[in-house]
Amino acid sequence: MAWLPPSYAWGNFSVLAVGVWAIAQRDSIDAVLMFLIGIAVTILTDIIHFGIYYPLPEGLSEMNRDTFRFSAGMAILGLLLKPVSCFIIYQMYRERGGDYNINFAGFPSVTRNRDAYQSIDQQDQTASSANPFNQARDTKPGAANSY
Image (cartoon, rainbow, N blue to C red):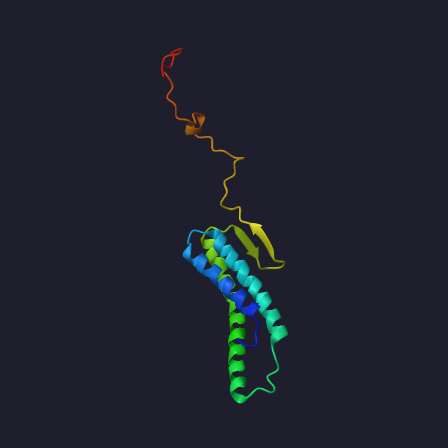
């Protein structure tokens, strides 16, 4: 990574630390969402870093050229695997109770999933709903309740 600036390493290692936090706290939806957003941001910053700092390998010795080609190949492979990581992290976010759906068909939109909600407009009219607190009625009319 001698050809990439320190901001590349800081960005990716920071997201890696958030990923460790997301895996360690199994009940935290926020950690997984922050990890997902961090991976998405590093995809963009990695592309910018590669575009700006990718040097021409002319003038390098044969050993340095091989090291450069290997490190560039590994960095590009990591960039190619990040969308797959995003998909896996999104599935983990949904498993932990995340409530945003992303529609990949057509225009991308983020909506809340409201299928799990119950409608309060329509209530069941059963025998138990006539007496919602299940209080026993006195059999004698006009009898006073003693508490």
